Image 1 (cartoon, rainbow, N blue to C red):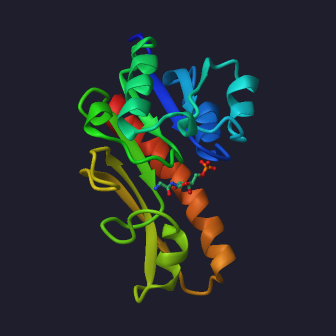
Image 2 (tube, protein in one colour):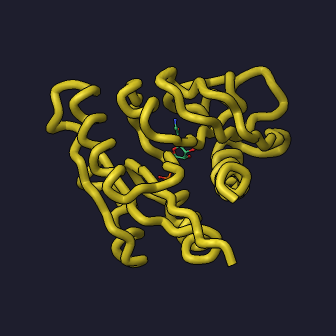
Image 3 (cartoon, rainbow, N blue to C red):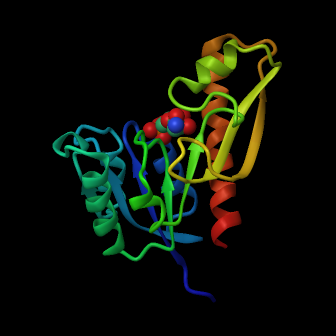
Length: 185
Ligand code: GAR
């Protein structure tokens, strides 16, 4: 059987998408060799601890520029030689220092190019379209701007914002899992 590929996962908050990767793909179809967060208080830290996945905490607040933060992140990631880095709720804009050295994909909770940036779920819910959705795309230094790998639509009809939000958060996990398979396997 072919050797499992190595991935890195980056997160900033709850880490539910990171947990989904751990529960579905880790040690089955690929190995999460490192998890990295820019937030020392991220809830997702316990996901790494419970799964005994090496964890790197690099507090972005301690760095004066995006470039100095990205330099340290790249150095740290390269120590683990991941073949793919997955941004799963990693709320940082990355510079070319990162994007030119690290092959990475990002999950975003809208049908890009609609609603880049923060609060994409609320913005999608409130726009004029009947469907919102989620995207997984390659990461470039343009925020939420790289080539789309896959998208899944979520119909808004009959859903209040809370129910729409919950559905997006379910569907995005399937999308991320599928996109990792497409890129890696
Ligand atoms: C997810 O909904 C993800 O799509 C979004 O942050 C959330 C993280 O949740 N990402 C972005 O908005 C990226 N621009 P999680 O920490 O529970 O995985």
